[in-house]
Image 1 (cartoon, rainbow, N blue to C red):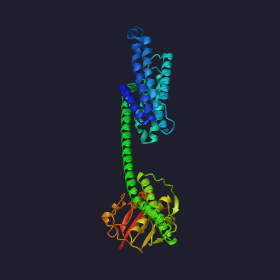
Image 2: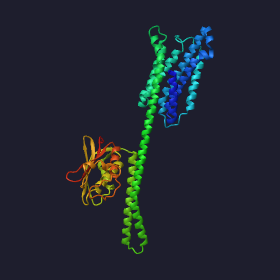
Image 3: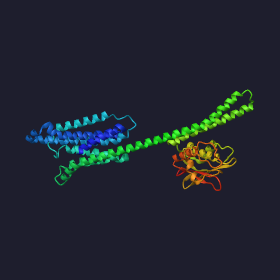
Image 4: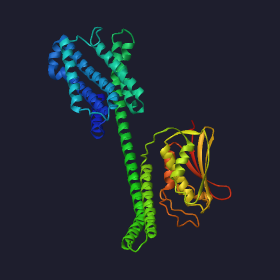
Length: 454
């Protein structure tokens, strides 16, 4: 039964290797297959290759043949132990030159045949002799399995499924040392030698099946995430195409009018039309930039380069990049407050927050930006004097393409990506963005960076 289970493990892990190209599965397949084949040969040698009648009339030769059959099976366990030992190191080499299955199978076959021939030449007298080679093979198997167990424990959860089977091989190899004892340990060793192969096979089978299930779950999650990202990208591209169409149409119309009436326009009129084209072109650039950043945030593809930097410098950069119109941006300085962040991306998040505050506040009002620290945590607050956001709407505005507008601001242009981008960038830094109501009137956008103060 044990060797049948090992054969099943070999087949399952071979199929897994064909699908995932995981070197660990290749070694498990080769090792389990070698053990199953060697065990079958060990059972067949006394009867098929020698014959039962011959063995019954030549007891000395019979002992030699039966001993050799034991050793052939032991060679299979030794090969399995070596394969389990090699599985974690070779698995860590994924991404390098692929491991050729033929090479692994060939080396395992050559090693098994060489050991089998060596045993045949040695002509062992009987299993259990104090000078028999079973001790050497058992010790070697136990030592190699011990290394495999140590690898599995040291490498983390990805290799724990190898630990049970390799630990069983340690007991199996050590049991051969007890057979030469003249006490009750011999009984224990004989019991272990009958039970442990099946235990090892079952543990390895459970490990392979569990690994396959985890791999299927991982691939399903990856597929779902890919579908989600592709769907989000398609939605972003559709909305951005719609938002780009209007300014591009305006540019085309203004340019056509300028060309048609160029000779009749004076310099002031020409400059006015060029200014209109420049303004609409800037809108296109803003939309394209918004799309580019939103796609990266949605896909989780931001590449952060963190370094300690003064938050005041990040805020100044954000204010310089923001479109403020006739609003006043009041920045409360916070000297000495630094954070380990990506300055470019954090400034982008703050700029998105400032643009949103400017867009939803009355002309001539001010937007206040403040930096604060409490218990080692940092926050950047952006407060406007707009109509505010009802509490039940405060999470909705962070959604992709949030189209809710307060009364009186229904015609404010925008793709609905600004606060989505802001929160996405801050969360990549390990923080979060929330909205509070300002005292009296307005909104406070709070960018929190927990544990980032340096």
